[in-house]
Length: 245
Picture: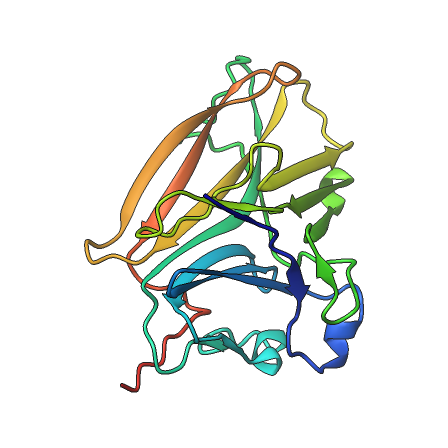
């Protein structure tokens, strides 16, 4: 078993003023070597908050075009040149959904036309110094309509791997991989609840898939929530793979 610390670097290789100033989107990056492979981890708040894990052969690094990212030109903004990833996985935290749980069941029904959506774009980070190593990337998004704020903290202090033949990332038992906290003061209905929509993007050839699962909340805010996922067989737009071999 291999255990190691994985520090993240904010906006690696960026010399733009936006990368040195708070209140802008940010990209956190870390990598780790396992055998002959490299595991790349990205946390990006450009456009929508995206968590990506990419596996390549050792010796390949991402090339990041920050001018394109800050200009919202995401296609080809991050490339792995002269190689094709062995595996990849992305989780996009897309929107916060407010709904009236009038029956107090904790269920978000598909045909509910009273829901309100808050698209999670424009998340900012308070971390300002380039190449500042941190074990906990953090983003926040003010939600003025409900007098609230959404905070997303990402903690990945370690990695544990049992089988070198199949590199996988695991959070340690004492760590949190993703911590999402919502503070909201301005809502009128007593049974107001919130849900999150996630998109999952991974390599595949079988087309687009949809699936859902249920999440049972903790004892302090009891309820059963449905988390919907959209599976896309394409590689996410932000990462365009250049294969010149």
